[in-house]
Structure formats: structure tokens, C-alpha cells
Length: 203
Image (cartoon, rainbow, N blue to C red; front, side):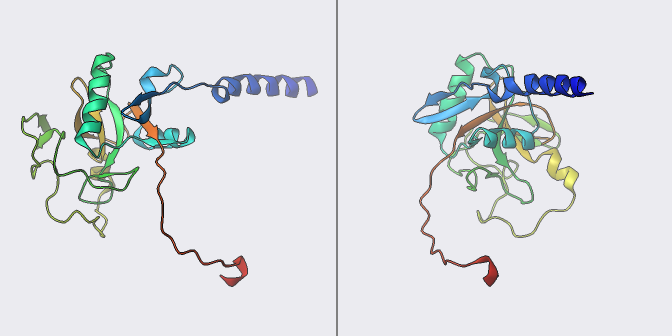
């Protein structure tokens, strides 16, 4: 019995070791460090939520593209690197609200440029202008909506934004689909919080 237990522990350690010792490769574009799952042979394709968790486990976050320059930079790199056969999760989503937000930063999509593929009914098609369109993004206030939407399947079906091959336009996809993903370095923010020291007994 002890021999069996010792053998099992050795097998478990051998299985875990490659994961724990995994060395990741990142790239730097315009001062931003990116982890592209397709570049790393041990990185699995994942659904949106597991991709988010995977990035966090590396001390990174799913990538957000708040500026045109940042979006163009990653798109150009992916095309030149020959990754135009793969879709990549970003942090963009409209889960639980009627507007698209970057989950890693909490910011709404930038209204000055738009790489979202227009959706007409169920069939997507491309358009050439960069202006916002009612079909693409909800109009009105950019403040997050306070009321949750009903029907989780509808939310899941078009809730998460991927860079879609072959030209990496942005397209809402089912959050449960398995895809590659892009992480970026976690940003450091300065918060002007007024902290009140308390003890757990104060409640």
C-alpha cells in the first residue's frame, strides 16, 4: 500500500511539474507587454472565462484596446506573425449590460473608432467606415447600466468580444467558445482612497 501511495505521489508530481515550471514568452509592443497564447506551446485554447482566469494566474489580464493605436499595433503584429487562422479573446464584453466594456479596465468602448463587425440579424458583414453604428453598439449614455438583462443564454451567445480571423475585426461571440487569447501586463493605478483603520471586531 505504501509503495502504491509513493508511486501515485511521484506520478502526480511529474504531471504538475511541467505546468509549474512552464516558462512563458511575451512580446512588447509600444511599451505594452503581451502574452499571446498561440505563441506558447503549453497554453490551451479556452472559453472566455477560463482565458480571463488564465491571464490572472500569470499576473496579467485579458487585453483591452481603448485606443486606435493600440488596436492597430496588435492587429499588425498578429497578421505579420501569421496568426490569421485563429481567433483571440479580448477583455471586451457586454455581460449583464447593454453596452460593450473592457472588463480589464472597466472602460466603455471608445466612440472615436470602431473595429466591431456589424451584425445584421444573425449574419455578420463588414463595413468600411470607422464610425459607431446603432447595430454595433448601444447608443446613449456611456455610464454602465444598473439593470441586469434577462436571459443568460442571449448574454452568453453574443456577450464576449474576440479578434476574429482572418483580419482581426472585433466580433461578439458565444462566451463558451474555445479560442486563443491575448493577455497584457497588469496596469498600476494610483488610487486616491481615504482609508479608515478598523478592526474585525468593529464590524
